[in-house]
Amino acid sequence: MEETYSNKSYRGLWLDEESEYEDLLKKLLTQQDIETNSHLNNNIGLAYFELSNKKEAYIYLKKSIEISPLNFNAHINLTDYLLAYEGIEKVEDHFKQMLKSNIDKEQVQFNWALKLGENKNYSEALKAYKVLFKTYPNEQYLKNQAYLYKETGQKELEKQIWKEINALKKTNA
Image 1 (cartoon, rainbow, N blue to C red):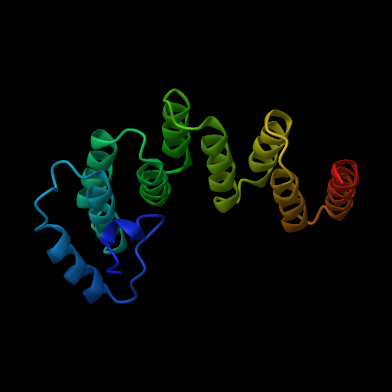
Image 2: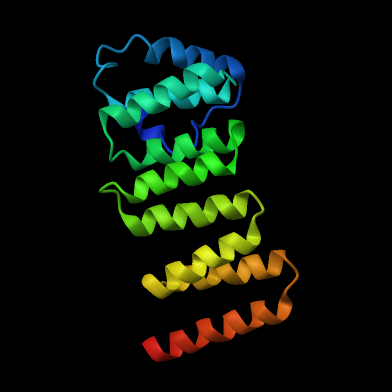
């Protein structure tokens, strides 16, 4: 089965060398469905992002979302762009816009918590995971809290979370 470029559309294309991105861009930019294909525009935006072409990356990532407002990967890739070039405030604004859309709210909130953690804003990430767990009781959100407590050297709180996880496992067994 031939691999398509749209299969490589989450958080970066899997290429190593700058020349590979340049070659890929040449191919992508000649596709006939460039005006209507959200995944194609997302991949073009990602390739430009990897090449540090800020202006073109933004144009194509935004175009991808305009074509398909529910293209979650394009939204997440745009937040990566915003984090790299415009700061966490712009990322937060974009996540707030996503919450107003028909995109899965849990996924939006989860990815916001991830971005906060990636930005080393651990206290806000912890708050976000606590809200997530309260709203969507998923063990993974507790594990992410434990990880953040570990990262911040809060061993007692980390242990407390692991006890809660183990108690949940026993309850659900």
